[in-house]
Amino acid sequence: MCSTKILGCRASSSVVVEKLHLSSALRRLILLSYTSSWFSLFLHNCVLVCRNRQTDELSGTDIVSMTPWLAPVVWEGTFDSILIDSIFKQQNITIATTVFALGKYTRFLKDFLESAEEHYFVGFRVHYYLFTDQPGEVPEVKMGENHHLTVRSVPSMDRWQDISMGRMEILEKLIKNELASEADYIFCLDVDTKFYGRWGVESLGRLVGVIHPWFFDYPRDQFTYERRPESQAFIPAGEGDYYYTAAAFGGSLADVHHLTKTCREQLNIDAANSIEAIWHEESHLNKYFLYNKPNKLLSPEYLWRDISISAAQVKIIRFSHVAKNNEEVRPNF
Image (cartoon, rainbow, N blue to C red):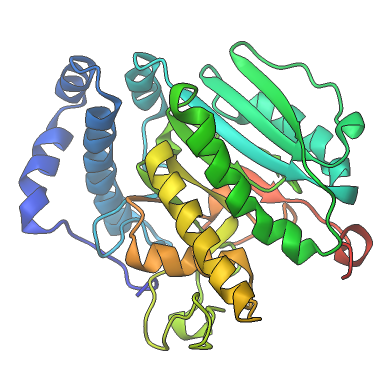
């Protein structure tokens, strides 16, 4: 249950975690002696779990920093940015990042790209893949070192729901056909957003979900899961862990490919049966994460609901939706 505070590590991992936590210098030596990004991720997650346990014990606010399946939830104060950057600097990793800007959503591109270049994986290799039906509207934004932007044309669509749901198929094909030799990780982000603080390698994992900013402090029975059994996105009452946003998710190429392929297949089954899940691809994403647990969760710091809205648990806003008039920017609203 998402509102339950997890205060301890299970016995199977506590000994390893404690030993890793005893000495940051020893931890650094161990981590720097390996070249495998997977081993680095494993040890980093162990450190996060242990650090998060202390955060829970000492915090005056009610935050959840570890899931029942011992996946860390990344909040401010749960990671050492200097240490984790030094670990991944050795890996020469590339993070593919996809963003869709169709119709009037091209107006959000300038702020998205400029703020990303200020805060998003600074110092690491990033390749943005921008999908748009208006390539001529893409602004010129100076890319940082080892940051690249590729623009891809896609057809216009009459319904915003189709734009939203169609992304899964495009992402599936991109990963399968192009990214195997081009990137190590991928994040899929909404364009009507802006970065305000660091988003770095602390966010990397095999499969990464972002807790929805509207539901992070809600009880599970208020989550807007798809409740109709006839939909492939159906989640029965009483089940579920967290409510995840579809505006930001990521992980390894293999894991995100499996996610997008599964969601695309289930969306197609629903379409063939004239069913549309309540929150479209986000409903299918939540069904996928229920049965394929993310090994890392990002707190609402990594996607907030509006920069002007505050919450006691959120000490820093790294990435946020921007205010907009849905009726004005969305077709068929």
